[in-house]
Image (cartoon, rainbow, N blue to C red; front, side, top):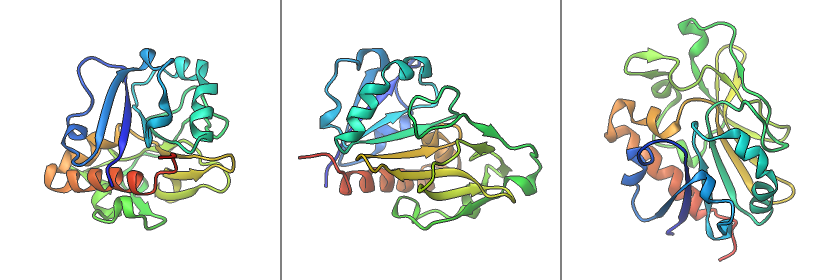
Length: 206
């Protein structure tokens, strides 16, 4: 099933190059500040990058909530500094940062990550810590997909909102970039699977 996605651009240049290699889906790229009056209801998911202006996102909270209430999906990357939705909390970095504390754990099997293991995510270019070093705490009822460290703090989580819509959060640097660190042979299939799943399970009315 083909999907349509909106990428909120808020940095020089284009989106992460890996996103332009996703097949079978449409990716519309708009500057974040130009989307205030854009109709988001046609998009299966809206992608918010780690470089997003969170002050502006706070200002358009009502728009974000209306999109979610209509069945939309928000894909949020990075560290939440200003919670722009009630379901979000400020990012909490881990206190310890040794290699043993940076192990990624698969808490829930999910189709988006079927082609990659937690062990592979733990080490990127032989270094631990790229994938996640803390958490945007998950709300009660969220499904934690990946956690990090001995306390298993949530790195990736998916929340199905009672009001409609869903939120997928990656509590680290841009997910698309970190998945590509081992090369396109590993990264592109995972990124493709994420977009395929978002499109196939979209709750947006046709």
